[in-house]
Image (cartoon, rainbow, N blue to C red; front, top):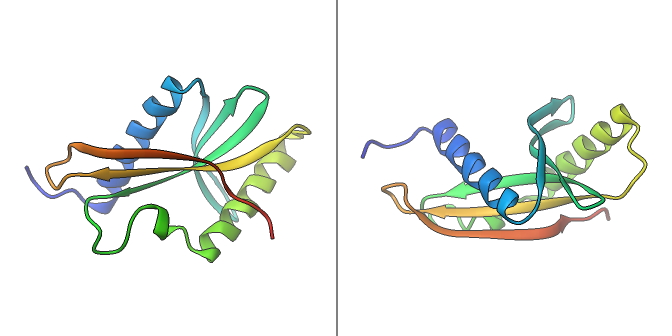
Length: 123
């Protein structure tokens, strides 16, 4: 199997995450929301919660696990992008940021998928 570009790997991870989240009862509202603060991979509803989902996909641990790739700067961008989305739409309910960590084999088969609810908090 040919090597995937980072963009292709990211797209595959987002597709896997969206299907996984739907299986967990999430309703996917939007993918790849972009604003000045950055991008949110998936916007979804989980019951009464609005959820912004960051998808991290890796094919090895050379650069650490998917979970370890969420830097303080990335957390800050996610919080700002989430707040921008909420402000633009006048959302006055609860919202949170979840992370879906995905590990694939070098051949592209799914090794692990892990949902971390409320993975990014202010402060």
